[in-house]
Image (cartoon, rainbow over all chains, first blue to last red; front, side):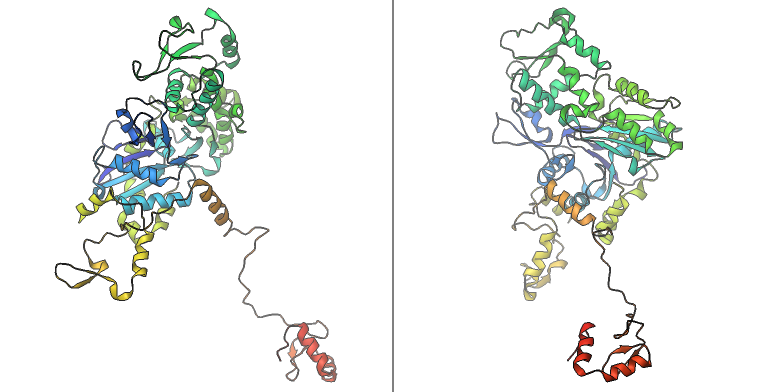
Length: 399
Length: 148
């Protein structure tokens, strides 16, 4: 290993933390929030302690992130205490290097707070603050050594970033952000179901599961809309989703097409997912559906590439990498490819890559980075921080 | 020493660094040491091996800024170093001031020691010597050089 201390990689997302030592095969995914359940009022659940709770209806979230930026340090410190403490990883701070991810163009005050907390309170041996997309680009380059550039589409909980990486460095003036992420999709789904069928505005956890189980990206939007309008057997899109009641049914599930009748079996609550199945992920492609006056992902990809120097553009079109939770929707890759192909000039080849696990791709990039020979030059050790102060970290970490 | 620090982390209150400075400044100089209970001698706070920098509890907890406050501050501080049409902060120039004649406005190369008026040539000098004192004061006041 290039670094002579153990490395802990923490992909600090707004929804989940992907965390683990760099030697582990897979990271542990812990929700990055404190939740309170109606059934156990006295105990707040930190991170994945929520798995201990039996009845998670009406789950109340306390999120440390606001609009994708870490502002609530009280909550985040509790989650980090839990993650770094005896229950989960039991880290030996003085002997560990931490690689932690931050959003793009993070505020100076937030960067300073994070550095201060990690060095002064947790007292890590050394630190590297980096963008998650840089880790993804690093891993992509390791897997495809011939490709010098890649365009990372990081579609997460709070927003989506389109970032071109040229020879491992991001091009700042070509970065594009779309303020639509998993949170917006879940909220939109709660909104329309509450309007059309059943009041689920308090059930964020359950609706998130519904979204992950049932929603997909439509490749032919108008055709799917007309199919969804049909009745009876002709409508192949509609599904019944059985909601959990935490006594008999512990987790909601989809009923396959053959058994979908629209009538609940005894003592069940169902919601009928018809055009919501593809309308919700459609927000990523048309944010104007909820009034967000921004481009969708394919248009932003083309816009971003057009802001790069001309000689790099064909390389970027050939190496579009989809990461982040929203890339897990079925048919996401096909839809992005067809839309970008429609926008892009004919002489460029377009090629879109979707890793097997888009959520943990950046984390694996982090664990690969810790083995890189360049890694010791990128990190800031506690001694260097104590001698040079905060400015060293602000200048060195290119966030 | 390492173990002691780690065990206090989970119980630490949300203090941060600012409190550290408060302790030093609030105590008067004579009490700037901790009493070593065992030996009874006074050791300075910073020489105590068990001293934990920035880890004192009991004061009010540190307040973190919300996103709106952070955005407002960034907007204000971003424009401080940038020169725009509405802001041009420059230090006063250190070049010697250009002097102009009080009578004509041509470059005032010479100064009359008696009246302290500036003039360009001998003709102006004769004029100056013919002026009454209140006129002289008037010219000086115009230049804001009228020190009584």
